[in-house]
Image (cartoon, rainbow, N blue to C red):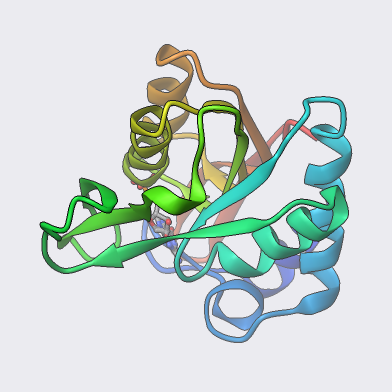
Length: 193
Ligand code: 5GP
């Protein structure tokens, strides 16, 4: 998606060889214009897949996931990051290690918001090692639902996330794919749409 690539070139800050900061339009301040374009692009790519729900991971996935859900006319579900295991039996949980923070959390989904008939599109801001997306996929399989794809705003293609997801049989749709990062340098490879 050329508009997203342009935005990253203009406003993205490569902090190191592995971390890109996009606080001015994704992670801190949010640009609703580009978020709507992103939602429309994912919705167009998945319009024939019978998507029943869009899942995302709090908090930076919420804005693009909401625009995607609105464009597809389906609900959005936010997977919560909880600090401890819940023993109520009313939720599905899986442990995730955060790429940026190095800490771990319990990704949590209420059993109320998933059913075996669901066909789910997962949206997240970044793909690094694929921890968050694999966790979302695991929760969806615990709920007995199908996962139609994983939509990513910014994939760091030099990390192992995409291969990990594809090896697990998941379809990945990334709007911007970064082949190399280093201080002040952001290089792109061809995106999926
Ligand atoms: P993964 O789970 O694929 O290893 O990492 C993806 C998650 O880590 C994303 O949900 C995102 O919050 C965070 N993340 C990974 N890499 C970056 C990065 O370069 N910049 C920012 N801002 N977040 C990242």
